[in-house]
Amino acid sequence: MAPIRRGGRATTIDGEILTWTEAEGTRGTRWREALQRDGTLIRSLLLEVSAAGRPTRLEMTTAAGLLTLHPEPDESVLHGNVVREDGVEHFAFAWGPDHELLILGSPASATITLRRLADGVVVGATSPIDVLRIDDALVPRPARWTAERVARHAWHLRTIDGFEERRLTIDDQGRPVLADALTWPLEA
Image (cartoon, rainbow, N blue to C red):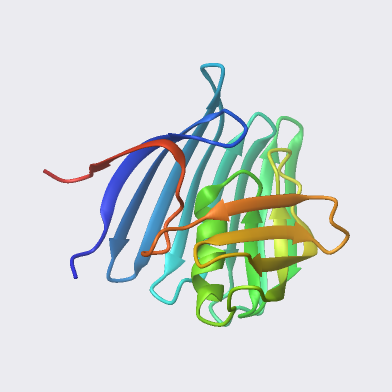
């Protein structure tokens, strides 16, 4: 099967415009997203994952600053920094093969997580997941979420306390199903 190399535009459940690309290669997949609200860019991100579906690099820009995160080669630590108007803040988080990145409002990050869970979670089952939760304030926080497979393609992600939640539908190839989606090939 040829590698996926495509881009597109869609409307998120919050009514924002998401422009994205997905480019598969021999070393993994590079996802890029730009999120607009009322014609203003509110977030841009680059998320790279290995061929095994593990995050290898995150670069995210919002009004709060510039965030970079990447794991050590043995996946024991995830580290990086955020550069803000008033300086640099360095991060280091415990990390392992069962940890996931969860960028709120990012179909790419949720899709990457659900692809990895899809083989082990049957419809009706729920699996706990340790995540590094990141929002547009660029304050990464370790958290415990659950992933419930409510139907073959439908998932319900939520915090253990139920305070935050996300719902996502993925297609047969494990890619997000988004409203008003248009897709185009990246290469002619």
